[in-house]
Image (cartoon, rainbow, N blue to C red; front, side):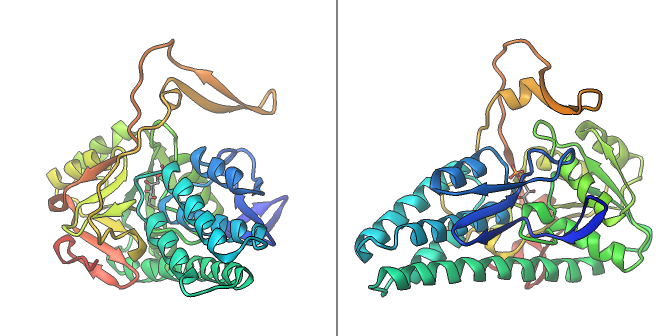
Length: 351
Ligand code: MRU
């Protein structure tokens, strides 16, 4: 993705590896400050995922794969069986950080499988790093393809509503739903994007930051305004990503997606989901909806230009807040699902 840093435009991916360090764009300081977070051991990688320095289903999956590569490199003096056991423990640690998105499980399983049949710790470390890099590169290519295919669904002058941050920051590059937006914009389709704020964590500020970097015309709206614009016929299409797609086409995504899908359906507006095939849950494994910290609801974070610093302020006195991070949108509200393999009706999604 293009990032303007100090007057210069540079290309960045969301997460990458430098020797045994897992590097990522720190999403907790954006859009105020562009900074790189460097996670130097397993606990630092887990903490970065948990606190959402890196977030988005494919991005946290790839981060976990790099975390496994880091653990393999740092422990390659162990006997091979012990190293394999350690990698399984590290994988379980990462999987517990954010349990809803399925990409991490799919990707980490693939990395662990590459160790099978290897009986040298040096070879295991090499194989794990190689597989992690391959998975990252495949995500870049899948997201690019999603944008290419999905942009065919966007008409000239379309007014698009995007929820959460299904952007380059939520993947390794390009994004899912936002890859479609990027391609449509580059094709000169004269689009306009309504960006939902996405309370409580405000992923909309990341989407708005990405669209600003790319010069895509857009505005930010509060989540509750989505129905208003849909009802007034001011939205032509809703685009969202996904954290897990079930074999029956039900879509698990950022909290608020279900409400949006119902409102889009009611108003005859297409509701399109974009996701790489790593987001497909072929095993129908039990779904756990992540419940996040109540402080994300009772506090907000903002930037004070007079002090030149970010501040976290309480917007409600102590009260029990609930903070489910995801919801389930039944397939009947989903018009189409775009993956790197094609465009599908939800009941025809290939898992
Ligand atoms: O809690 P988050 O910010 O990790 O949730 C992310 C989303 O819900 C995205 O829409 C999803 O990961 C798909 S697009 C990268």
